[in-house]
Amino acid sequence: MWAIIKGGKMFKGSYVALVTPMYESGEIDYVSLQHLVEYHVKNGTHGIVSVGTTGESATLPFDEHIEVVNQTVKFANKRIKVIAGSGANSTSEAIELSQALAGQGIDGFLSVVPYYNKPQQRGMLAHFEAIADSTPLPLLLYNVPGRTVADILCETVAVLSKHDRIVGIKDATGDLSRFHQLKALVSEDFLLLSGDDATGCEFLCMGGDGVISVTANIAPGMMSKMTEAALAGDFALARQINVRLNDLHRDLFIEPNPVMPKWALYKMGLIKDSFLRLPMVQPELNSQNEIENVLHALNTVS
Image (cartoon, rainbow, N blue to C red):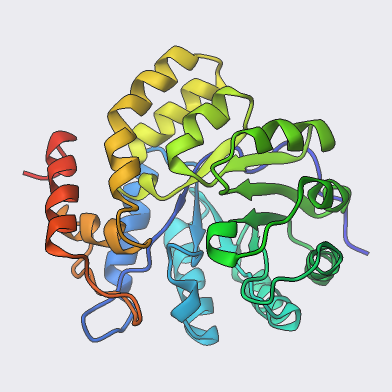
């Protein structure tokens, strides 16, 4: 029987939902991936989520998914925590992937609400309990109904929060009222993380434990400082930093994620190519211009 791992809020802070850089050939660009990991270590990011939605998990085959996580762990070299995306809409596939990733030196899993199937709440309970029972590592739930077309209810999260290894949730609903509902139903040691950059600052100021952020790909230092300020109770400073990030929060989502963050990182010279796996394609010219204007305003490109 595996040990109980609750307590300590192990994943507090600013976590980046990291892109997976690729060459125009479609192969993974591990040189750029190493540069990105160094960029986040240098800029104070508290942890990396490897091969989540922003990392194009939907189009990376099983072996490639594992290798990207493995290399991210290697490049991080224990200087920064690494959480692996391991969700699937098939419970057996999510278990198989989680078990394969568990030996890669990761710190935990992020597991998305099953997409496309539209499972009942009882189905979600059984799904996540089966995954959590299958490995000794901590698991974060991930609720993003805008992508999955399924919404795990706060009452279901409350039941799952009692599992020894289900330690928190990334809430990407953008609905701040959900924070209060969740807070009232879960114990103090259950992590509440924002997965919506536009509302992340307020989520933190309400008492959230951290963010898993797309914006942190582009502005990791500002995101970590904003998060640290909010966690320290300096809400005025957190909001002051966030005001500078608002345009970036908005424009990184004018096309489906991760189209814009990859383009931004390419323009910043942090990755060699902005290639995405089909069916994702390059941003429209007006979208390129819009995000480049924001990058100039933040002094991230010359």
